[in-house]
Length: 264
Image (cartoon, rainbow, N blue to C red; front, side):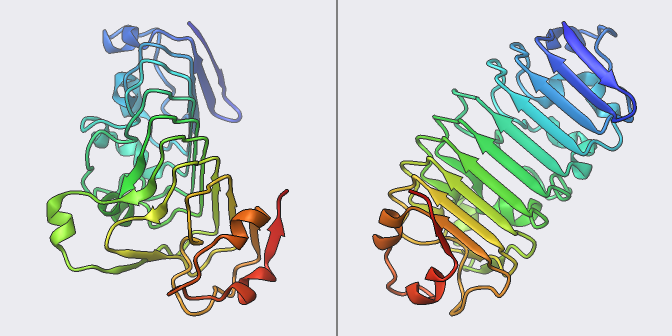
């Protein structure tokens, strides 16, 4: 077991720890209640967050980083949704989970889970096809400011269809009011940001970066006739930009090209 706690910065790092000992009530793995940043790396026997029993006593967790925990099946299971510390979480970084097909095992109720989340980075999930359902995104991620999704070979959509009941509801237009930065990189099968019948856009976008997403045919989250006044940069590849479908799309190619920065 390897771990450390920096009391002045309130950071805990768990690396190559036996999380199963915590499940068994072993007091050798007890998190400080005032921890702000939790890093979990190479803990092979953790299946999800609720395996860390003392996490239930953490009162103000702000940042969570987890990487290469091969036994982890998803970030949340239904039991994890009772961990109220997630309501204060502002930054979530998840990397190197080759077997995950879903981020969350099933829909979570709108109890404020992820309601404070501002930064979400997802990297190297080769078997994940969809990140969120529309229902989960719309009810829990309205304060997100920065979304980065990279190196997910099978990812087809970021936000997709949920239950049949959700799809039966009349289509709506959802503004993601605080989203400023969207980065999509190395998603070779991505076809859309949102494939649900609902429409999503952001009125506060400042930066869009789309690299190596050859099947994506439109710039996501630009739903109006004009681009948001806040938009400052669009980072793309020239060949992808020239191949986009502009039919029935709001802002024109000419209007947006002045914001382009090309990556060769």
